[in-house]
Length: 307
Image 1 (tube, rainbow, N blue to C red):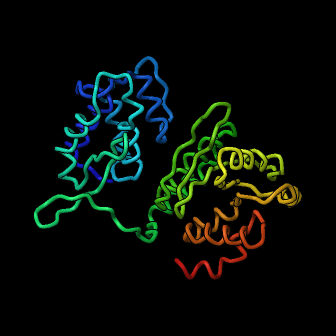
Image 2 (image 1 turned 135 degrees about the vertical axis):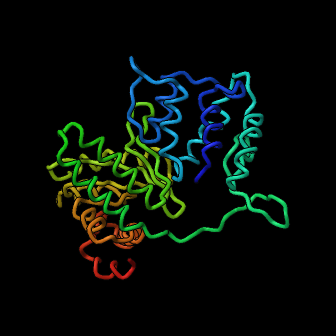
Image 3 (image 1 turned 180 degrees about the vertical axis):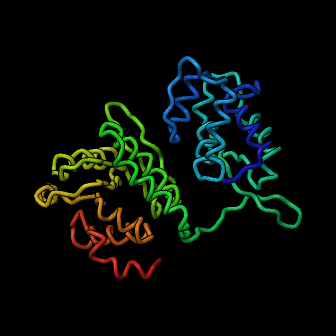
């Protein structure tokens, strides 16, 4: 989603609440909001003006799916409960600018969400774009991601886990998997989630030298099975999975998770492989055999035909 600069300026005002038509967000509230979309900021001395901070955090999202997600969060009906503002007024104001970018805020149940619009016979109508095949990620983007991935290994150990989460967010965003950054619910920290083939997958990411054992897998498994009856998960490690750990995990009950290890990531980035096809093959292997882990090296020859 790409917006013009003047549209972004109006969006900043609505996010901060400086228009007197949307709820006011102070500095800490803005930090919490943008940290949900990949920032890692803290509020304290030397913090810029609220408007400047919001602008600096929104600009990098322009042209990415996460900008649409941010707007949807801002216009979520729950953000307006108990406030002396009506979201339809702010939506109507923003629509004056969005229409020039090909978008509009439209009511969806109790919420307002971004939709694309198209001109038909001189009229603007809401369009429901057809599903598109996954676009190929540019060589430049993959090269940048590969460099970023290699740089993580040079960080202090305590910083690698968080850096890996940010890297994975950028990777899934590049492949248009609608990623959500790490988030916290009561008693749990989730490393993120993605949307693939109309399903939501919880993400568990580990940067550790030791092989992943059954106890590590059990953490994600409990979240996947405990949150809903349709839960699915992807366990990602930069290292490898313990063979005994995989066996112990698969003996407990049918798995709703697939695994990606460091070698899989290396092949993906080094050979520019299609991530969607990797996930499809791993998921099919899980359904057909019941096995949690299917290494990319076993199907890389066929996979390269999809590049």
